[in-house]
Length: 173
Image 1 (cartoon, rainbow, N blue to C red):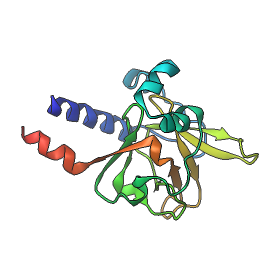
Image 2: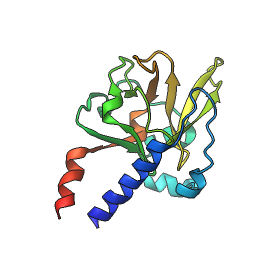
Image 3: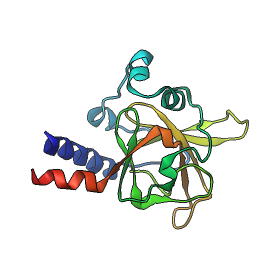
């Protein structure tokens, strides 16, 4: 059973890394409905699956307090997945300390998030969501480190971390 889950996970990562993400624009994916059927659950089901705090961030687009996430200090090798549907969104090698108080990444796993314009603070920001469940993750800014210059600023409560050490030993069973 564990081997099958790992192989399914690897198939998702493989597909994500071959898709494209348009920077700063609304992203559409022609293949997304064939590979990731959108998870269109009623709000009552999502409320059962995640904590009340995570629900507010993921499905009501709130923001957690800066510095509140344990993931800010996570430094192990692994993958960051959506807290709602567990779709892999970021690899640990792209995480860095931006000094903002939220987990930040230089890039997502390509094709696993979609972006849209956000004017809730009057000025334009680009927000991003999990492509499978639509869960709000955070915002992308153009003040990140080279070479891409992107800062994918994520709500830690919208993510779960899966250390690589937890996955590899299961392959031997």
